[in-house]
Image (cartoon, rainbow, N blue to C red):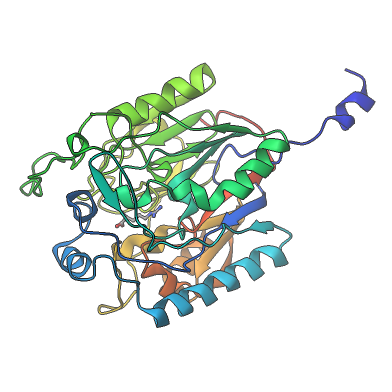
Length: 362
Ligand code: ARG
């Protein structure tokens, strides 16, 4: 190809292969209209007994308005930080999560559009809409429809697995926690493929996934077959007794640098043997701070602007020190109020474009 032809090639608006290449465009979620979903066995499964009680009691109600406002303000600060560093930031459309919808056999209202990472899996130029297992998230993609259509018009691939029907057969109606020490027992069956995008984490040609209360074996297999021979999708068994989303357990921060939850990864998978592995420092979120659907280990859910730059929670001194001791700049952003909604910087974003190409790091 002549050089003129190369430069004339339009750049795909969607292109991201890992969690650390230089970030150029990102979607940042919104908390507007966030609601507790109707009570359902699948909603309770990944939560602690205390969290379950809150979700039962407040089912269908909005999240507290002051907490929504405080989280909104923190998201706006994150946007300012990213834009200040030259990253193009996009936001989802505001939706009414109180509107009821359904399918044969069930109806629901919504949750929120705070965590684009849960829904959108970007692999190269392909943006995949996750077939989410929660009925309250069945239409999560709607909030991103404007953006997805735009990216598609500009040349991105846009994929959606078979739309889940989410009938009762997908769920274990009489599910209870597995007894201590016993293998993980999921609340979902293999009735049809379901997954959340956040149960996958990308390191170029190698993508790591876990089964969870929202991701089943068929869901992982769908991603594996869809991506084909250019990728290796590894299923990891982590020691998380309420698994939902891998990004507070295993976070690749840069080529050769892996951050892990100190207990959920009892054995670092062999493939990382040449990587430097460090445990996340103990969280500093005080007891009593509301965390509706996450553990305090959401502290390790950081966002890399590039492999030398980590966004860290403004009050999280230990994480700031970890970043700096690992040769990274730590960029503080207040996010504790956002954490209440179940995620941190990684969950609250989906990288649309990072400058880089498809590589193998192992
Ligand atoms: N399940 C994790 C924990 O409780 C939180 C993961 C949140 N991640 C996300 N993408 N929403 O520690």
